[in-house]
Structure formats: structure tokens, C-alpha cells
Length: 254
Image (cartoon, rainbow, N blue to C red; front, side):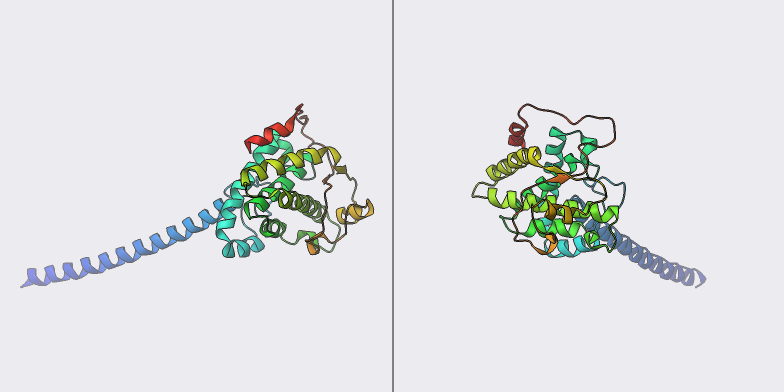
């Protein structure tokens, strides 16, 4: 009798432990699924977020709130925009030092931003979807009340992104590959006619003063502008910008 009771108690305990084990396993699987989904979203999007000292092309780069909203609505586009970011970075590295392109305000960084938006525009069928994502990437830093370095960098990015949007829109056609090559070649040539602005000048105001466009680019998406801008020709790394006799030919590999 005693052994039967013992066996019954052991059976009950075993069932209880199994249930707990199953529950723990299910919870763990759920956490892994959530983590996997978040990682997939971050990996798919590409150059996103505003965290300092983080490579924009790293899959660990965090999305800002505006980008999260965009990607929740346009996940497939975000995945393609990741590929466009990688392509823009690779092309930047073929014409400039890689270190230069990761530093804001440089000529190489201006090229990368504009090319990325141009490629997103061709990927999005010539629509404003890529331009919209590039604006979300700035996370309203261009709207900061004071003329801080962060606001100036964001406004400079917006101008270069807008140039890229119009280049991509004008290049878009039935052949997406040809459109991407055309956009890349156009922006390589635009680097020769771009302008360097210095000091603590507001990029929006300075761009308008120079006669290149209005002073509210985030609110005037239909305005056509064509001049790239930057503050420094290269980063203060002691490394020279690469020089090629015919850099536009390299666009064929984009």
C-alpha cells in the first residue's frame, strides 16, 4: 500500500515537473522568436538609428522610432533598402577611403548619403518611399531648436539625400540595373561641382543664400535641387581621398 502511494506521489510530481518544463520551454521559444524577429528587422534595414560611434552598416545598429514606424508598414522595402545601403557604402569605398565615408560632414559621406537615397528611389520604382525613409533616418534632428552640430549634420544629410532622390527619380526606367548605374555616374560627376561650406553656418540657410534651393527641404519634397554639399574634403585621419582617372566606370559594378 505504501509503495503504491509513493508511486502515485512520484507520478504526480513528475507530471508537475514536466508541465513546468514545457511551460519554461515555451517561454524560452517565445523569447527566442521575439529576439529573432527583432534581429531580422534590424539586419534587414541597414543604415538606421542615431547611436553615436556605431557603423551605420552594422546589423546591430538600432532603429530609431521613426524608422520603426516606417518598417512596420513597409518591411519589404526596408529589406531592399538594406541592400541599397551596402551597395552605396561599397561604391563610396571604391572612390574614397572607407574611413572617410563613416565620418559626417566629409565629401565621401555626402556621396554615400546621396547615392543611398538614389538607389532606394530606383528600388522603390521612382517613388518617394526611399526619400521618406531617409528623412525618418534623421529622427527629427534637423528640427532641433538650437543650431547645434547635430542639427547641422542632419540638415546637410537631408540636402544630399534630396539630391540623391532627384537623381534616382530621373534615372529610373524599365531597366533597374541601368538606372542604378546611371544614378551612380551622375553623382560621381556631381562631386566635381559640389560645394564646401564651413564654420557653424546652417546648411539650409547657406544653401538658400548660395541660390541652390529653399530653406525647408524636409517640407518641400517636390523641389528639384542638384548641388551636393560638405564641410570637409576628407576626415582628419591623415588618409588621402582615393583618386581615379575614370571613377564613373566603377559604377558598372554597383
